[in-house]
Length: 363
Image 1 (cartoon, rainbow, N blue to C red):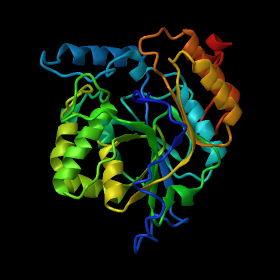
Image 2 (cartoon, one colour):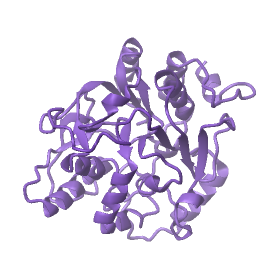
Image 3 (spheres, rainbow, N blue to C red):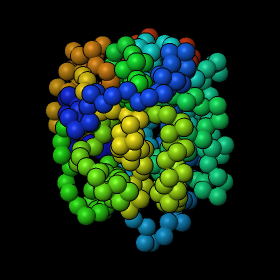
Image 4 (cartoon, rainbow, N blue to C red):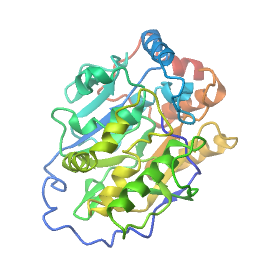
């Protein structure tokens, strides 16, 4: 359930910010200590849930006629559950079994296959967001509260459920004395004076970042590349610091109900750029893949993934089929591929009677 990408980069990186950044004095603390946990945070939604659909429809009916919906902001693919979370947890157990607590943030939902198990908590929107803000269907709004999750470790990784680890996880790569590891796409973004209604949320988020960061620091150099669809290592204290320094941006982000092109999300772009600018992050390069399941050459992309699986730091299978039916060939290919790559159940799941609906259709 990621945002649309501009292009399909294979090796992500940006030479302007490199691993040559010197270690930050005093960084050898909770941010890098091998003894400190690295928690995992997901957002999850099941768009086929009738109760959730009724809530969403009622919110849509209340929308102001002057609302400015984001491009691709309310298509079915934005809320569709292709079973990715189950396989994401399988990849997590396979490649990073030493992970910390897992938090799954949902709107009164719980995956039917998810066991009551130590180490995993389902966080309802009602316990994280103010009651006056609910209901919310904009992930950018919801994720602006992630660092407020009670008990969340200083180090955590925010994962979209369609972004998977694809090789053994090295904590010292992702959390080092030089900063957390970030990855960028190779394609340059269009250059506009401000957010555009026809552009993706990631493009508009980059424009917002440029305006805010250059306004604070005349020496700021904006590199017009989006950050990759990748695991996002975060530091809880740093997010609280940014919230204190940019209260108006957080207020705007938390004013939405649905995605709006005029109110871009903060975590995909401003947060990582600000972390680089303040010495808390460094842009690296690494083997990775982005797959767009709606592309004409999607079949060859899936074949490449199968060949490279186990040697990729991460990969993303983005559902770009928008309003396709659940039994369409591209969606069945997602289910079939994930089962082939990650057949071993994790300790967080129990079997469903008759198996997964996606797998039955894909068989």
